[in-house]
Image (tube, rainbow, N blue to C red; front, side, top):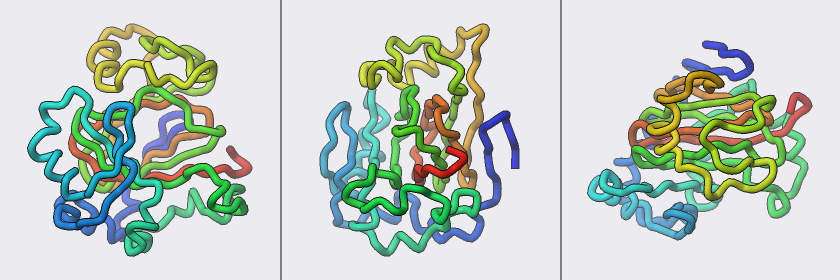
Length: 226
């Protein structure tokens, strides 16, 4: 395990996960089920998974803003996937204050993410001061993080605490056109590879750039450590 200040980067936790062999994109290319959380620009649309896999192979490389899938209802659509990963002891649901909230009242808290190369997430803080973790099954992700004490992110037009930053710079453009020119106030950075889990503490800014087509699972939680 490599520790970088308050952000932890775990290695080897996923060795026994079935997801490592069952979740690569190719496994879904003939599955007719439809997922609802496909982000196409600012729109969210339902798309059959085979169509998304075909899009990755044929079109994504030429898109300025490649599509990303955030499947929050994944275990309703794919109940068989629930047993394919194990929540690490570090993030036990038994310590999550939100487990006592009825599902229809609870904020979305778990997702399977499928993302094309060059897509990503602009700088943001997770909602409701939750803590998060993301486990990578396929591909590679470049992460940047700033602690809560950093109020303004270099190159970001608006501030998340005043306004949801839907018009902030796209992650790709920030990493390509802003990050190389920073002389100070640099983010904490790491490259996540398959089998790695990144921990995002409550209140921490983070941005992610997909260096390859990626598949991941992520969950948010709230415990006494926030």
